[in-house]
Image (cartoon, rainbow, N blue to C red; front, side, top):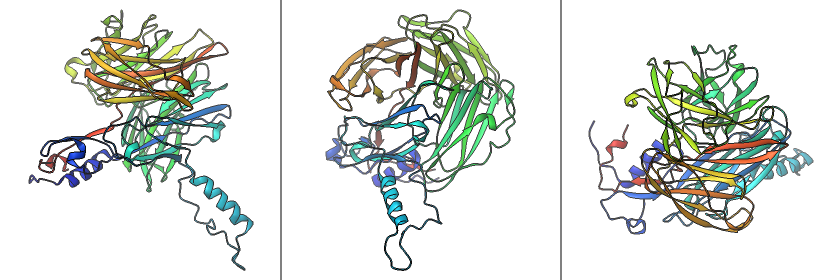
Length: 518
């Protein structure tokens, strides 16, 4: 292939094509503070997020939160808007859009109602006013929608959204939380189930103007499960589609790995795992298959930890298991190594793994040669009053990450540096209804996990954001736990903090960008 030197604008266009839902614009070298001829690290100027439908329960109460941290060098203008996916769907072709009487041209009563309906549909569910201050909205019952949103200009770099749902009773009762995510073309979900005691949905959200076509593969303890309607699932433009996993196969299995592959287009995807006895939560996608995985922030009072792992392909692997505790890396007794057969889902009960201390699992394949995906299901509480949550293998925080909807009491920020010591800065934003931001720095020792005493905004009113920035060392992994107690049941939800990908390195016009050609 001929090597071609692209212009800076062409390079930015190529980056936008590669990243799909994020884009940068050509910078002014002086404004960016970068010398000509060197790569500039610049704020992303356009990005998108997708939030799945929160619940099918009439007893659900959902809080949506949106936030962008203050970013040096970001554009002075911009917007960040989340709207209902259903509201953005194409109108019915048979609907009279004009709503006018054919005889005299006056607006009919139907036209008035349609106009009011359209006006309501155009209103965003959430819209940011300024960086550094979160906004929230509430929705009750099963009508809370899936959301599709975009941010540009000063709101794009580090834009984060979260939904937190409390379900008072019934299947899945408890606290359920998930960070809204970007669209992609492939996802892995170890830890799902088709068992009769579970009601697991894979939620697919399509942000684009054309339909997406998706294949769903299921892998159990003996390999791939036979599915009836898992191939060629169509997700309509700008819409959300929940798919009940147990309807895809006749096989009932406790531990299943779900693989979502998008044939055409792109989607957001997350599994909602609901249990008859132990509540439920969202299972986000695992980090990409790798020979080294970190599952951060297992609660110190976990009563049971169940690891579910899967290796694609035919190769078997013996995973080395270690726990990053406050004192360093230790090997759990009786679980030094775990054997995985290629193409088969394996589950391991690790019991009360953390034993009253903060902890993160570190899984390693010999020489990192065999890629693996993994997640843990965690139970808290006593028998008969237990609640469950999931922690998938996470991606490291390369620069910055944010957790939303925090409370002054009930928030735990867990940070681990499994390979080398690190220094981090944590900023508590203003509250949704008032408060002054606070910042603290922390040192995380190599091989340890620490539940840090995160800062709280002075004069806090409402919920707030916690932004973690790496200052040195690493890599760093983190998760946030929200917890409360209702009727003696310890409600909780855990979200790993992935890097917000708010900054991107843009080569100068004089640099060779042929690597971006495909």
